[in-house]
Length: 304
Image (cartoon, rainbow, N blue to C red; front, side, top):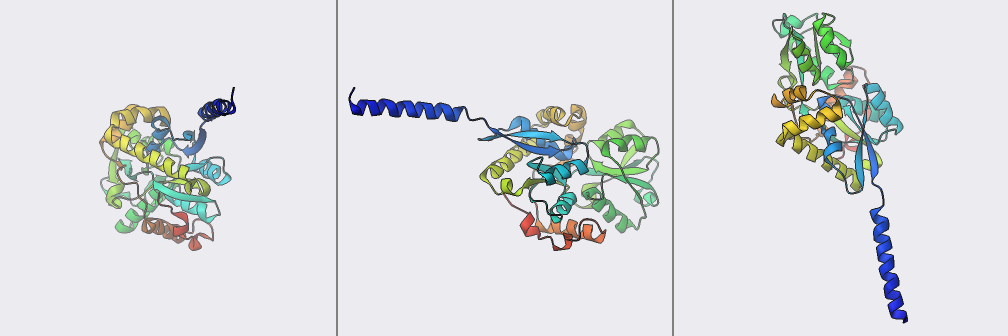
């Protein structure tokens, strides 16, 4: 065998070996934290999207405190958080960036059906999921506009429908599908949709660790979630089935939420102004760390 033929065979073998080696490289799993709420419906991306070098691994949490701590500690690579909670976490030194709105609008003030109008809510017990929530921010806007004094109660979202039904509370504002679940139990009604309080408002945001957010993988990941939002808009039935698998909520309830357009998924943009407004609200309410006032939104917000 002459030298040229030997080198040719060796080169071909090297190419085949390299190709096989590359084919066997496993995709990395990017861990994204979420809660079983329709605010985090874009987590269906874990079922509908596979990146060129990664897969989306969903990590389901049952509380905002746990998901925030997991992101801060690096136990997950990213998480869908209440927008004010993300701001507070960043101000406390978490190495994160906010890259996307999870949706726009998405909630309603659900009350006992005997409450005639908004003014009748004065002095009543109203549950919110967290002081670090857009729900608190929106309810505060409503209360100021109508000069209401409310008895606020922090409550886990799954507890709210039954608490309203049994009279423990007079109303609540929270992410879906718990509003629909409250209505389905009977004796409740929608007093106001969140879009009526502040049109096109943000609620939850996607936060990623900084290195991921600034990488090409992070950009592809965000595009994957954008594709999921398009699927939600174009095929509500499929989105509801996938949501049942990912969120663990009933397909019929998810379809109720989507058919009523309670939350919208066509505009996932984030503005500096909306984040500044939430930041100022947290400062007004003495929430967050002492560093919150110095938080630079431009350093936190990344547009991908």
